[in-house]
Amino acid sequence: MKKILIASVLSFGMAVSVQAKDIVDTAVAAGSFKTLATALGAAGLVDTLKGKGPFTVFAPTDEAFAKIPKADLDALLKDKAKLTAVLTYHVVAGKVMAADVKAGKVKTVQGSDLTVTTMGGVQVNGANVVKTDIVADNGVIHVIDSVVMPK
Image (tube, rainbow, N blue to C red; front, side):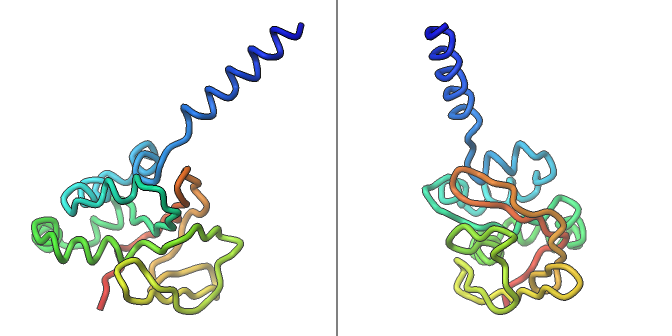
């Protein structure tokens, strides 16, 4: 009986370690962030978001990116400096869970502030937060329905 219990504990521990994913792997596995994953690659930010963190990412879905006219999105994907600024504007240092969100300004990794509102649902610069607390081993993802742009 003791051997079975130890084997069960060990196999559970291995399952947990295999399932742990960073922000990028978690987003890719979700399947609705293909454009975000492409953009992170084009900006050279994949390794950063696979890093230690913790990070809070307000992640636009593929549908959010589709709201940007194709020519504008194509131009953004080719402009590494601007793309990096836009993507890092969606990232906050630290792990902020939905229960900890407060209305106000929050400093992004890009350097500018996002405005968070909580009346009638949480919004970030007017983008609706449609899903919260997707936990990764180096932070958390909150899904938004629009791409937010730094000023």
